[in-house]
Amino acid sequence: MEFHKDVLKLDSKSEVERICEFIRQELRDMKRGGVVIGLSGGIDSALCAALCVDALGKDKVFGLILPEKESNPVSAEYAAKHAEKLGIETETVDIAPTLEAFGAYRKRDDMIRGVFPEYDSESKSKITLPADLLSKDSLNVFTLKIDDGKGNVKSARLNKKSLNGIVAATNSKQRTRMMYLYYYAEMKNYIVCGTTNKTEVIEGFFVKYGDGGVDIEPLSHLYKTHVYQLSEHLGVIREIIERPPSSDTWSFQVSDEEFYFRIPYEILDLLLFAWEYNIPTEQVCEVMNLTAEQVKRAMRDINAKYNATRNLRQLPLTVE
Image (cartoon, rainbow, N blue to C red; front, side):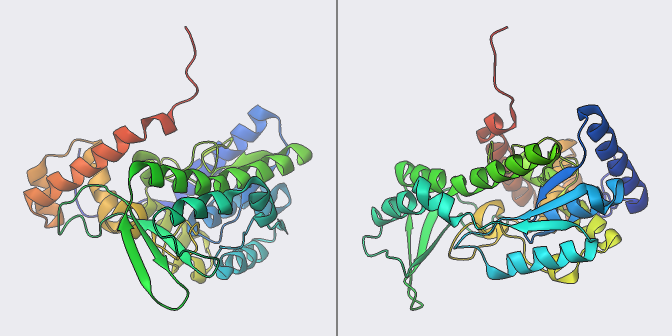
């Protein structure tokens, strides 16, 4: 297997045609009339919407914009602007009342107050992993960071109970969105289009039966680098292309790299390719101008995340 700096460069036109045929074929096989897609204001959902329009036409693509009270306001703005450019019908549903009825915010905040008792309605929160894995080795131990609303930031490492409680409550946001997507899909006799890319699939950066609970995944064979290439090719709006990638899940804004990946996408994707195809460490070092220790450190991190999230990629297990 060849490995060089341009190994992830696509023939965008051919790849778009291949994905569009996949979308059309799956729709025929499932005997459905169109596609519902959740528009987050991020690049993955924007590309999926563009691909679906290219494959099916704008009249068979329905976009749902599903903000909640902690979403960045520009997310819905960018989603609507991109949908308008594509010419697709959309509907915006505020999912905050559903989350409040479930107790998602309260349950999360109760767990946070177990770490920071002063956390209140004016505060914001996020969790992060240690930064810049290539510069310094460290374990994947999450830190909770809060902003009291006055610019004062505090942080503390999380134990397993606190982390699990915060994540479980927060993941209800993605699962609530998927509930709405399937409501509209079943009402319209459509399928739900997922937006998870290969970088996220390998490292387990998605929520099972949340953004991972869909009918088709047109991007799951594409690294994030590919997503940017195809987005440029299909004319995704500049605001989305230039926006730093984020799950837009936390009230205290956090990038995907800060929250989980620890390595910039443009470097991580090449490392993931090398991991997938067992490229020798020496070759990776030469092509990427990294030390052997940096490459080994990255590979350990990829393996750890891949193995820890194996259950996310599995269908329900059954008795043979």
